[in-house]
Amino acid sequence: MKSYSWVMKKDSIKKYLIYFLILCNLSIVKIIPIFTKSVIHYGTFILTICLFLSEGRHIHKYYFHVIAYLFLFLTIEFMFTVIRYNYSFSNAFRNMYKYFYILLAPVIYSLLEKDERYLNELINFIIVTTTMSFLMRIILSIYWEKTGEYLFSDMAFEFNNGLWIRNGRLRVMMPCFMFYYVPFIFYHFYGKRKKLKDLFSMAVCLGIYFYFVAYILQTRSALIYSILMVILIFMIEKQTILKKIMFTVLIMAAVGVFINSNYFTVIYDSFYHSGGAMGTSVFERFATLFYFARKFSENPLLGMAFINNIDMRQGALIGDISDIGIIGNIFTIGLMGTVVYVIIIGRWITTFFKKTSILSHDKCLILGLIISTLLFGINIDCFYGAVVFSIPFTSALIEHLRKRT
Image 1: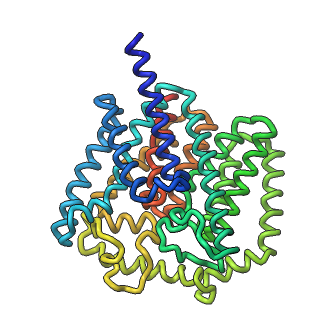
Image 2: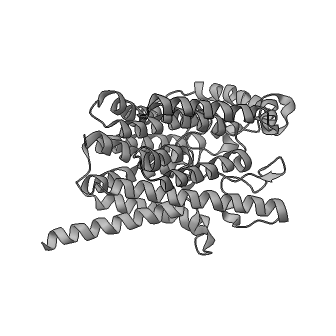
Image 3: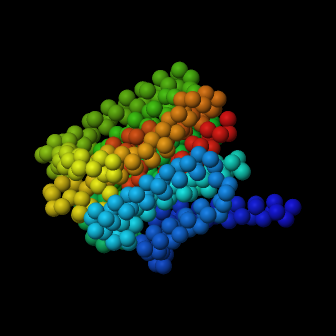
């Protein structure tokens, strides 16, 4: 009994530590002065390593193989970076450490396997805290617009220099779970046919999400991908024909209103160079793609390695490599690193197509997570620093749904 009690207590501690890591990576704790950028980065890295080591020999076989290959690749790529570019160990490691978040996946998976209720608890916690993070980012952007001063400056300066302005508004980097927010919302609130208040909560969450994407982040791709995601998830859920017809009519009406709005004109014009900053970004992405493709061709196996953006560009007037999404990261880590994508995302895809016994509601979540990763990956890679923390959660959730059938 004592042994069982200790295991339960140990698992409870792990759950609370994972919740704390979520709060850190969503930047919610940054309202407390002690939680600076450095404290969060180093603290979450150390805590991730400790949680992984606490699993001991009880690591799921699939994750053992993933992590073994990951360590092999990271070691080779790290040494390649240091030797070829004369980088210091600390600089090379600073650009590499984000991949260690994968070590959280077997920990989360283990907790999901031990407690079936933890799936809904975890998704609910992610939804609540991500919504809070959205609201904080909306508030600080509006505050800057009204006063010209920064509120929660550490959050405002995440992955930018604080001058990320478009159309007179401060753009704030997305929360780490933004890619998967819409699939989580539908899974938690909609698919299980809960009460009317749950549908209302879902509508409020989606309203906050789309306001952030359209008005604060001002990203065309995220807006388009999110709308497609909502339509796709609804259409594949088990619905009566009447409900699907009603939903289709509602979407068509919303699209009609949107097309006749001023915001549609802004988005339409933004795809051309005359569209200003947004229009320029389209042409800049193509220039960035061609430039880094040439760099990648010099060493396709290991790519450009773990060097910073300034050294990558070498003075070229192009965009950041993160602007070209998954392709940009493949250029960075080479074909050897691309195997990591194949192992992880390929597992998700085979789970969806091969596991016919998975409940349709769970399959909708799996498909939503896959499509979100691939669609958003056109512009922002899932291993990009701002969102990489969400990957171990997505992997563990899908692996759990794969095994519980």
